[in-house]
Length: 177
Image (cartoon, rainbow, N blue to C red; front, side):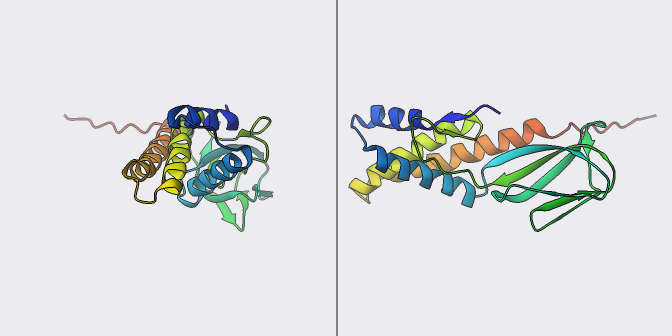
């Protein structure tokens, strides 16, 4: 998966705001935006398992909810699995792609750290950053509130776009005689 450069979010926001933001403050804002994505259930991640029948596999602790499973061999949805307490068990051996809602990892360093999300989320994160700065300066800022709404709309669009791209196609065929 391609990633988002954390520093670029700060730089784009600074350019649009025509100001400089302290690095420590920028890290806090970026991390809060990631928390918001996760708490809204809009962060998405996939994992592929080469699974053995009836063996439990642990998920990363940041995965919040399992959305669906795809049998890679048949390129179709797979329903014969159990998901409990952050672990998954498949009824048959095979290769499976699992889609989850996730809580993104925080960044500690803007220069070295990257955000493990699809780049489609970058515009949403920039809008959140700008909204945060504007609302910190004036909590009645119309532009700040508008940017908050744009953050959510862009994050939802990025999330839905990924879900739509990843699901196998289902085509219904009807015959008329």
